[in-house]
Length: 386
Image (cartoon, rainbow, N blue to C red; front, side, top):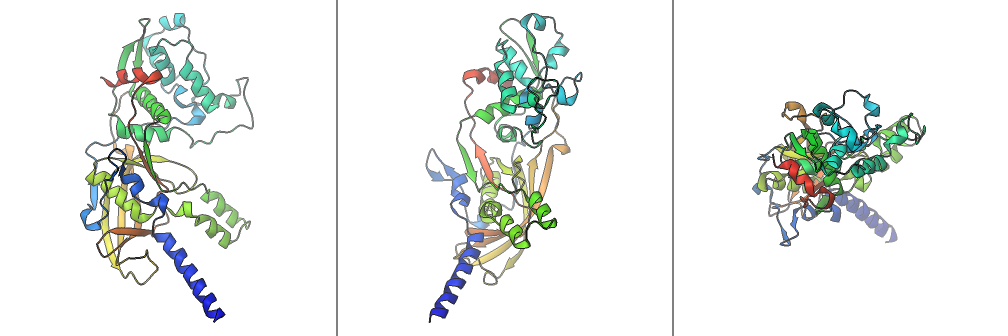
């Protein structure tokens, strides 16, 4: 009797683990992304047949730079050809008297942070100094007193978490020239304005929604350790299969994608890399195809599964591009990913879970409300009126 009980407990544990892999947990419940906080209503539809298999936003998001930390964020003089790329963040700041003698071309070469400080008549450059302090980039300049030979900034770190919502929330900006309180004409290129919008959203306290958990595992490092014999295959799989690295759940992903793009005409952001690096990309379109219908009893599925549908999906999103004075959309601004996953439907035809087939998958999804321009960023709205 005791042996039978042990066998039953083992089988129950195995089944529970299998179900946990396909049914969404609290962090993966699509309710988290589909809730309207004002009305306390759920905006999504979960019924598979009511969701479009393809869709695209009416207005595509614009492309821009992620203003990497190792270049000094928005204190980077992107339009100054007179500097080496590595030292466009290490420069002497102009006094008011010096600025009056600069040509429009020279003023145009200043960083976005410099230009905004000057627009407000702030010749102590609080925004520039804040960026240099935030990024700690001067510690990488051999000519600067704070240089630290051992200090290193990962090249993937930046403000993509500010750029991604900004490109969904604000119209594509055009170059503009504005006069500061002392009569100095400050020329802003498209990328200057995008940088400031990106920085604004970086510090925005507006409401945000999040679906899934962030994976903090470096897959490449793990595989290298396995290749070097430092860890076993079981240890490798155990690390790769950690709960936060298995989501976002395929079922909740499909619900969010189809509702956000096709039904609500609202973009959202996806961390396109599955492991510890975070690359936030704005999603604007998708194309899905039903591959086949599977027997729900052939494998462990979410409890209540009546039908399983395999999906092949092409996800379209905006990628970063180099800075530019004026903006012209081109094919290089966009990219796509191809995924396969199973959707699990109950007797009502509602998606109740899912499982990824492709190893490549998004890490998490999120979106953010537009915030009000106020405080130091109150004048930012002036840059969007042209």
